[in-house]
Amino acid sequence: MIKKRVADFFWGSKNHVPKHHWIKFKDICKPIECGGVGIRSICDVQKLTALKLWWEFLQGSSMWADLMRSRYGRRAPGEVENTYSQAWRRISFISKEADNMVVRGSQSVVWKHTPDGKFTTQSAYKALWNQGGRTLSTNSIRNPKQVSKKLLNEVFVEIQDFFPFFP
Image (cartoon, rainbow, N blue to C red; front, side, top):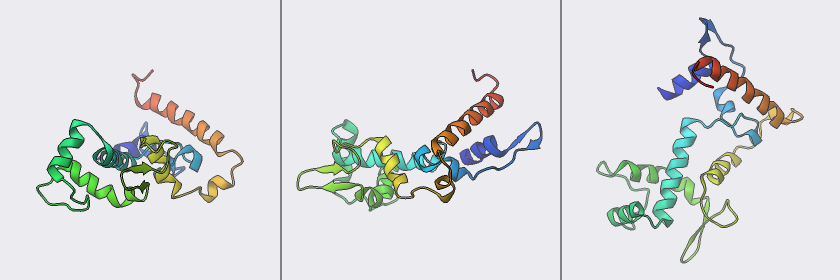
């Protein structure tokens, strides 16, 4: 439902005239460094929040982390039953992918993608996208960041047209 609304925003119609599909939505959702516009897809945001839950479960000292560890103990995050919470299901879903993003020591876990070894959603987002690399179309453009900025300006104009109350 949300994906459809977002797609309609970009490629729906304006004054009952269908908009032209210039680019795939998955290409728009790439980071600017990879030739996209930098808009995050709902799937990417879900992955990032799952990674954040996984890290908090693993390393956190919050009441939530303590509660989750007391409820699920040392159980491997891959185990899922119908009675388990939605948070545990998200942690289990992302655990295999997340294990490749850390270095495990005897007493600690270090996040590979930051200098201090601490998790950030920004570093996680970049780590998810570093697996894909640049596309052929962005390799042939002299300055992909400049193209992305122009496209962002066009998207902003569309947002203003779509939401008349938007400043």
